[in-house]
Structures are given as C-alpha cells and as structure tokens.
Length: 379
Image 1 (cartoon, rainbow, N blue to C red):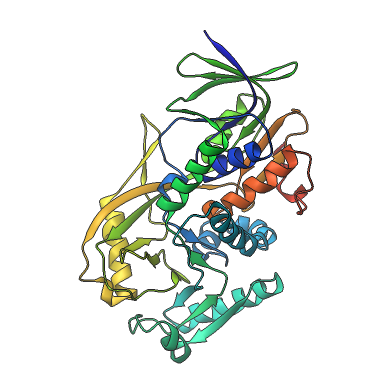
Image 2: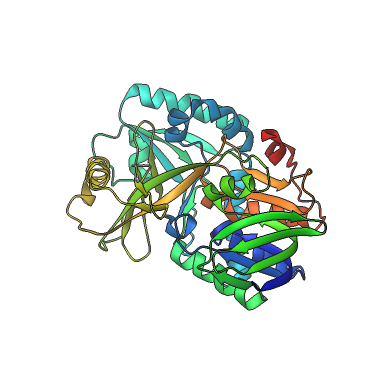
C-alpha cells in the first residue's frame, strides 16, 4: 500500500470542496482534493441562487425554520460572493440577479407571503409583495392562476455547468492535486494529523482534513467519532428545448413544489423539489417519471407558454439538509479537522461557505461569527 504525505486533504469535489481547495492553494497551502466521482451533489445543480426562505423547506422541516432564519443574512452575501468570484476568475457564469418571484394562487397564500416578507425584512432582506397588476408589469408570462408574488431583489440564477467548469479549471491551474474516482474507505487520527484510505488502496497522510462531501459527510465524520447528522434529499429536475426569452426571474411557489428559470440559451430549467430516488447499490440519485409529469404539469399551469416545449433532458441531484443551518468550521476535539457543509440551498451558499472555512483553516478572521454553525452543536 503506497502512502502520500500532503498538507491538506479536502474530501468532496462539489462546489464547496472545489472552492475550498482553490482558496487554500491561493493562500499557499498544498492541497489534494478527493472525490468519488458520482456527481450527485452540486455537479447536478439547477443553478438557482436562492435568498428568501423557501416555502417548501418551511413546510417539510418546520423544526428547522428558526435555524433557517438565523442563517438567512448569509444568503444575500452569498449571491454577492458569486458575483465577485465570477469577476475575479474572469469567467462567464451567465449569472443574472434579476430577482426571484414566489407566486401565490389565492389570498391565503398571498397572506402567507406578506407574513414571510415581514419576517425577512427584519432579517435584512430586500423584499416586497406584489399584487397581480404590479406583477404583470415585470412578469407578463404568468397565467391567470397567479394572483400575486413576493419579489426578493437579491435572488438570481446562473449556469452551473459553466460555473463549475470555471471553478474546476481555476483550482487545477492554481495547483490543486485531483484524486477523482476514488471513494474514501477509511479515516483515522494520527499523532500529527489524519490518515485517509482510498478505494484504490492508497493512503494519504495530512495535517489538515476538510470534509466537504455534502450528505456523505455524516458517514465520513463517523469514522472519526464525530456526529454530523446530514440528510440526503434526492431531487428530480428537467430542462426544455430552447425558447424565445420570456422568464427573467427565478420562480418559486408559496405552497407548491416548483422552480423555473431560463438560461441565456433559451432552455428552461424546471425543478422545485419533486423527489428522485437513490440507487441502493451505488448511492447515486436517479430520476422518476411521476416527478417529471407532475413537475412539468405544474410549470405549465403557472407559465402556460411552457406547455408546447419539449423536455430534452432530466436528471437528479441531491440537496443536503441538516437542521436549517450549515455546519462550518473546526472540530475542537479533533485538531486539524474542519467541516464545510452549507445549509439548505447549499449551492447558493457554496463558495461563501468555502471562504469562511478557508479563513478558519488559515487562522484568519472570517468576518462572520461562525459559532452558530459549529460542528460541536451535535456533540
């Protein structure tokens, strides 16, 4: 069995792990990124930049709402961080921050949005609730079922294929060593760091270990006797053929599972939380026909102009949920061990979360109080 000594090992090659590895090598650290290569997390993301609280999460996990609210101020900062990252890399993520609309179909739903918006304003978000006449002026594409919407001005969208590719190219150019297609089969502590055993029977020894494997973080952390209770939520997504530009905002619903956004190519991504499955043998997310049918039917109900378009591709990704908040920072009982798991809507929070954890690894002030996100709250 061969062994390799390296300064930092980052486990997880999604947007968080890739960004974390890149930021660390920019600061002069020697970094190896390990990823099993399934692409079940952010490599399958639909590109939504969420800021306002998503009604779907509030309904599914009411016990997590207080945690969501405590983390809410990070979301507008996260969208601005995405913008600065795009600029700094000289890349084109197709990032548009035209606002997000959470629509209502009846007065009860609109009243819910008024209450939600007031709570969000107190937490620093820039939001308004629009009646149908005002909504019509900025989003004439909605069908008659929609009577109003909450608009969050900081929300937006990007093309995750372009963003992920640019971030990966940057990490490699900066000097991150990639070990892809290798699962982690063992983790153990050593007097001066950690030992990482891979499925190809190689061993890595490092002084610093960062777990950024989304829902897989729970299993990895348990190998070291650390409890990080992640929850995998596999989600189904669809994309249409190209259409003329019509949807300028990120669309959600106050009571039903739907998101829509249109890329610069004209293709419309339809998602919003319809369930996918997990292949038991591989642990890989797979699509569901019933989710596709229900998802696109609802999309056509909200935006009738979507109805004639053909679905050209479906795929599944994984949202990782914990307790409404991210798990970010060091594990004090395990010197040199760090956790980097964002909260719900983790793709939005991904690069900013990576920057915050990077700063703690480097001994810098992250500029945010991370005590609320400490891994030790599960000890």
